[in-house]
Image (cartoon, rainbow over all chains, first blue to last red; front, side):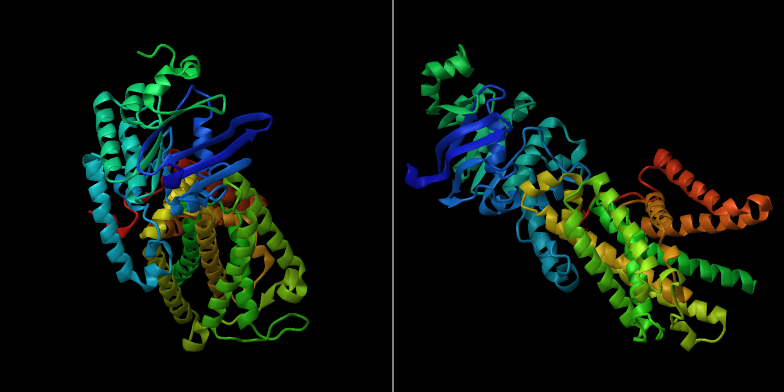
Length: 256
Length: 315
């Protein structure tokens, strides 16, 4: 299993003053899976995401992506290595259109060097046409076609979750970290979201998902990692999680 | 009639020179969200560089290079750009009001250096005799000013076109994304530090260009031309015209400079002579009033921001 681990955490620890938010977490996430990261509020799940994605520096430990260390790289470098994440509370660029929120994403655009817009405008225009075509496809896939030219700030909460997904897809990352993708999403939109995640997984995308909706977690996530009070309580399949006394005590309770 | 035409030409030259500085600030604040409260300092660097490079020899003061006008413009932009790299590397990790306080302090420091480093700047007396290229090509003040207006129009046109090309592009899209949420932008692979520094330096180079055009026109530079009120005027021009819109930046320069000069005229005619000395303060209050009214009734300025950033994303 370890040989094909895409994301490896080795003793990842994050402290805020005297409080240890993430306490020596170690696990391997195999390539091609949809992993679930669950646990009670305040367990340290989002902090772990922030640490892995480079938004906060870890105090100890190692994070390996495809066996290469990525811990403490700045977030834009970690993204370039192939790890992208969405946010628990969506962070759109509210005054930009949905289309340009998505077109922003591709790495290495010639037009991101300002001088290329003067000196190589034909290349920039060609790349922009390609980026637009791909963005249009992804927007359709994420069922955002009707709001393509709307300001992102006018979208509903559920649409913003889809926009977050659309943006990370634009980069074609090796692994996508989704932070509560179903929170605040109405049931029909949630089915769409789950379908899209499954479809993307079939195409080879690896996911690690923080989610409180146990129907979603139990139906699509395997393996499951359970955190409580900063520590890893359980690692294994969903059936095992439902039977594990420590998991039941800390989080699941009497889940049917 | 000739008097009116002369006045309009004179007015257009100064307001368009201000307009160039407003375009520079627009790149920083309008598109990137960088609160540069030190605009006057970067125009001063450009102005003094122009004066030193193109001006005549002076006793005990650096100069006498008498380089061509265009070399002076390029040198002014380079000097302001180098200043901006140093200031930017030191301050761009600061956000919003903290960046404003830092850049304001730096501009005041630059003004004090201009006031005191006599070998470089001529001290309180400033530098005189800076050549105006139009004087070699035309006879009479009106023709000379009309020619200089043409030069300024060409520079404004080139600056505007160059800026439009880069802000309506993938680079401009990054600026806007970083302005709106730098954490999200970094999580999507963009480097806020690099992009902020680029926008800051380019904006300051344009401010330096504005300062250089100003001293060539006036023929004289002194530290009193770069007091904080200049920064305040340029900010007001941007807010009134419309932040994140280059047309708005130029329109704001014309309107606010128009109000400034007309109010000076009215104050000189209407206000009793014993309080004429406070005329400048009254003008500043008026400009402040325009700023507040704009923010209250039209916070996005006269011409607001466009929805689509990249010209390639338009339907």
